[in-house]
Image 1 (cartoon, one colour):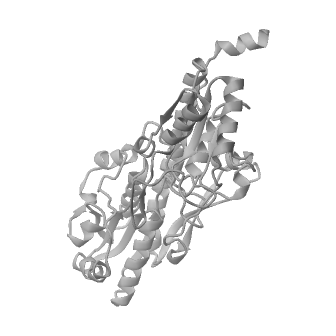
Image 2: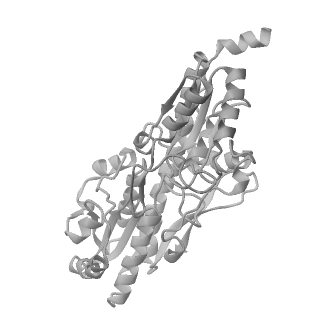
Image 3: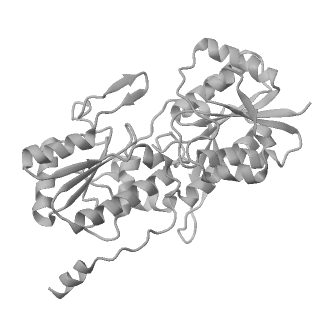
Length: 397
């Protein structure tokens, strides 16, 4: 009897989550000992309800659509897995002769991955290999240099802010506050700095959750820029906190790890209106940023596929209780190159990686050159050039 593989998606999708699934399928096709690659339809609940679909039955033309399909083609979930659920899981895996289970998700899903691994060990099913595939736009999984999903979301936020900046510069009469996802980590917010082509370009202010937000300093910074430029672009994280650690806007809803943040961008825009008398508006891309295939990074897509391939390869080699991660390699010419590594699963379960202090300026309103150099290779090709005739007039003056 041939052995089978199971892929399960967890948490919020990305623009390249399905590319990792494609990577698993391509690797599986190299091994005649694999009978089926099941997708758990609807996340962990798909395992418990035995809603499993063999994805190898689909032809290559259909499977290749995964590379440019946003979201999760097999469905994801934030189902709160119970101890009883974990105890049931190994017997379900045995029922379908699943020898290799590959959970794909963020640090919450890696917690689930670790607990499934432990449940299999406790049940005596040591022949079941459990390997995690990283995924999150937040880039907050520990140890790994970065995560699949982040590069595309970073490309989206940089491109979007760059386009907004052209609009604001064309009619320089207001402040525009753009809100970025990321929860407690400011990686995605910081990536908006890649919108800049030269010094002075927007975003003019960047606020991440790692640095306490000071309202008075924010208003000072906005007023100075507005008086000088007329139009100001601000990028702020949804997870901004005061000096006492509380959110600057009360969360709308909270359950366990899931926090539905208040409207930070609207709050900051209202501050500019009410306290400075400046016209302001807010933009909150939200899901558009994590679902955009139009701004998918080809680097991110390739690395997501690689993570899927390497996860199955590791499992087939008998490795278990690990997550695939990325490590940068030093090159003579300084070019970007990574290798995959295997990280013990207990080192990434529910652990958050935040921006280091070296990536944030002292005032907490901008990002360092060091971050830009780290992030730039992940987002792919250069953006198209824009034309601004007003710059030529400045040169004459």
